[in-house]
Length: 322
Image (cartoon, rainbow, N blue to C red; front, side):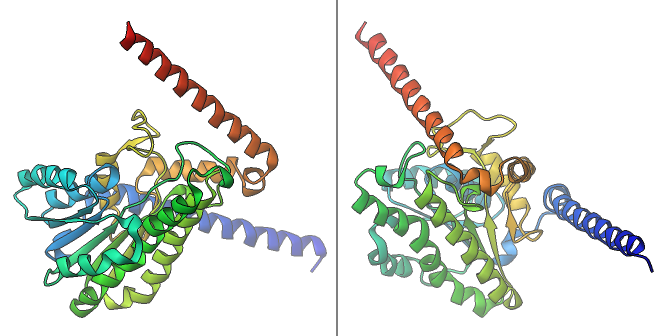
């Protein structure tokens, strides 16, 4: 056999391998975002109650409402009692029970005994670890974190510590019943290193890896651990950016993301975000994302955005004075 024939055979196997890989990805995408629209898992089979952290706004609020709409009683966990009561009343329209737990996840370890006491005796079938926070409203260098000593601890407590600690509280009951669903909200900012969001990005990759490892450990015991890594969703954290074909409203995102339960343990949540993730991986490879040139450009965008916000605020102030 000649060298040319060997190369031809090797090339043929390579092409077949990549075609099979592409076909598998297409099937997974079809299953997640098309087939899931037609066939939903009955979430009530996991248990009577769902627990949602960060439940008073954004994605957390949307998950809580959607879970109630699908027939579950909901435990709402957040730091504002007034907002908790408002969301509880909104959920009343679905005829489901609600409980509220007022805690601040930035306080760290001290809050979990109180949460455990409130959850005692409930058949918790679903946990949504959604609570999270950013440390800046724009792209910023690590040393520019405001009140860094306090803020770093708060971000770690809120974004990272909350996930395994809340999981620790509900997982034993799920294992005992042989069924359960844990949904951990990560971010596309944690899929790959994101300069100028260094701490936030690092906390989100923690959520992703913890979710994937936990799913591998407990799927044989009937527990699903799903990691959801969205792109832009219109929430307070994203300054309620306008909804369009790239940016989802929180309610639409939660509905589409919950449809993927049972079809994927790792998901972008919706087809739009999955396509954006694929495009970003191709158009913005890691070597370019981590380059000084890209970081400078990203920084310039942040500075321009800050300037536009400042000008807008000054105009609003001038109009009020007039």
